[in-house]
Image (cartoon, rainbow over all chains, first blue to last red; front, top):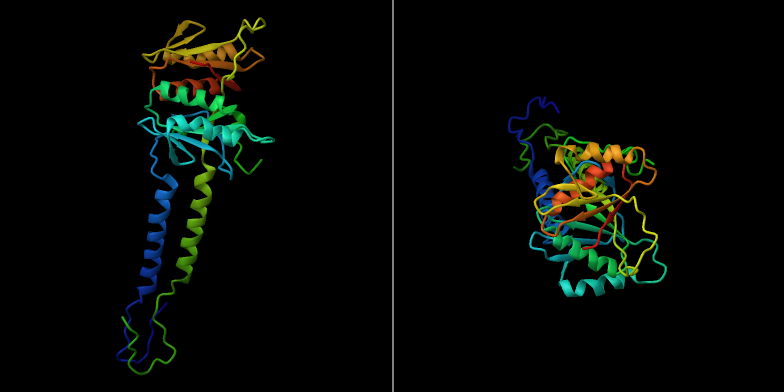
Length: 154
Length: 135
């Protein structure tokens, strides 16, 4: 990008940053819109662990969130405690469903009572496996051989 | 910041070429969008049977129940185990055992993180199936 302009007395060498600013602002807005939607009002900090099984997200995953107040979120939408069982049964009670796994993303400092109550409701609603979402503790790797296979690389 | 090129310099173009930058940014965006869902990890647990049979005559007598007490201590089949020793104890139990099943029974007053920590240790010690004991 050398500016070896010969003559041209009035040639301005300022870079035209306007398109760059445009792009940056658009990216900023995109991130500002998408990040709250990813979290969607529900802020549970899952516990940390070491020996975890990778569960890449897929369409149709059902996620039960439990925030630090014990409020339930079914697929990121708040739901009242007494409505949860019916909602879960509606999802898992259908004929021919091929998985009975539900992801549970609960806040780490919750009383276990809240979590076991939720699991109780899930099991009555037809869930068989609860996958407790856990963060990999930084700098650790699972001791279980099969966990270390990269998702997608099987 | 117009292009008030005086005279001369007919083919002179002094704009920054932002196209490669946009390319790179979009690729980064796509990479992050793919990596974030991929990185989800979890511990699979079997939920208790919602309709427990009243009497189970053939209940396995040698099942392992890991308890987490209200104050965050651990016990394997009622025998207290030090937190630091839990992993080694589980490993010595499960290494020779063919069936890698554990039942985890957390006290209702303990924290969720404690229970997950115990399940995590159990998985590390070779347990394949984690059952959640009913309340």
